[in-house]
Amino acid sequence: MDDTAQAQHGYIHQKDDYLKRLRRIEGQARGLQRMVEEEKYCIDILTQVSAMTKALQSVALGLLEEHLSHCVAQAAQAGGAEADEKIREASDAIARLVRS
Amino acid sequence: MDDTAQAQHGYIHQKDDYLKRLRRIEGQARGLQRMVEEEKYCIDILTQVSAMTKALQSVALGLLEEHLSHCVAQAAQAGGAEADEKIREASDAIARLVRS
Amino acid sequence: MDDTAQAQHGYIHQKDDYLKRLRRIEGQARGLQRMVEEEKYCIDILTQVSAMTKALQSVALGLLEEHLSHCVAQAAQAGGAEADEKIREASDAIARLVRS
Amino acid sequence: MDDTAQAQHGYIHQKDDYLKRLRRIEGQARGLQRMVEEEKYCIDILTQVSAMTKALQSVALGLLEEHLSHCVAQAAQAGGAEADEKIREASDAIARLVRS
Image 1 (cartoon, one colour):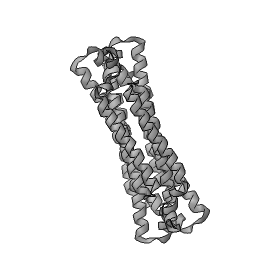
Image 2: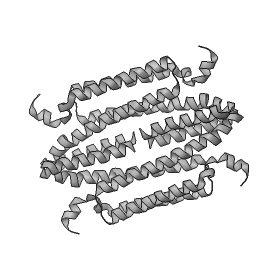
Image 3: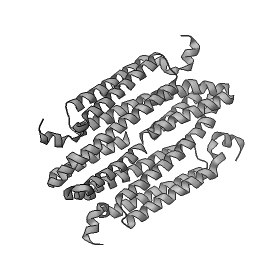
Image 4: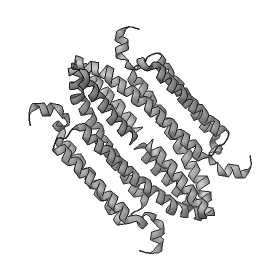
């Protein structure tokens, strides 16, 4: 992978950290299946769902900050239609996160 | 499992459906790892995170409705401190979902 | 107002408290207009919007808990179709809160 | 107000539109007080709270997009510590919106 790609997808600098967090989230999804399988108390399952949602949001906010720092900032420096497009695209992604 | 347990944890009536949805969510968590591994575009990863969050919320809302229908409704019929406790506990779980 | 109405709309026991909180939220909405009018810094406006959203959510969660304690619990005690309807209606309101 | 200020706080280009939306939100807050005052049905109040929350979120997302387009994009063009600071500040505001 060359420097251009590195600059484009800033999150890869912390790739291992994101992979570790996503593996933990995958583990939480398996844990939830086990709880349903064993018919655990509903409220305890909901507590786990809330924890998993927070972990996912935290991954999303981290990726978004890196995207703004690298990809959007570079496009802003270049300016023009590409910059506008990147900002609109990021804004749409933020709206999806806020509404989900 | 006896009838009491069935009545207590209402969601088990749809256990297979919940397990299927949670397996799909586990698959989404694995898909996200693959996207990070392959350095996919950040916005596409965020779109997948939003979809996964919505799927999780939908599981939570389903479980909560069944919990209200079975566990909380039964406690309300019995009345007394147990009923108050169940409603406070459900309200706390709802607050965690709204805030996550 | 008779006892039936009191029992039906449980929140009126804390009517003054809710009115006070909603007046404060109305004040926050006016404060936001002043900030836009005076062209305050965007991030400071967003901080106020987040505070106002949290205040609104807190009112909603309070009303919901009282609704479950009074209206839904009473319907559950009575049982039948009315109970099912009240629980479905509350679940729909919870879904709207979680998704907004 | 000079051009510099216009560039800094991009949202003022649509100042009247934001003021109109915030006045409508203020009206919703007054409507909620009236509903509590008149002891309206709890679920109907919650529906109004959800509508008001969505209206507030929509204002926040609009302000944020304009902030990214103007203030953050300008800082990115200038580069350096100021750019990093603006992006971190915007990311923090986004995190507050996502979590509220």
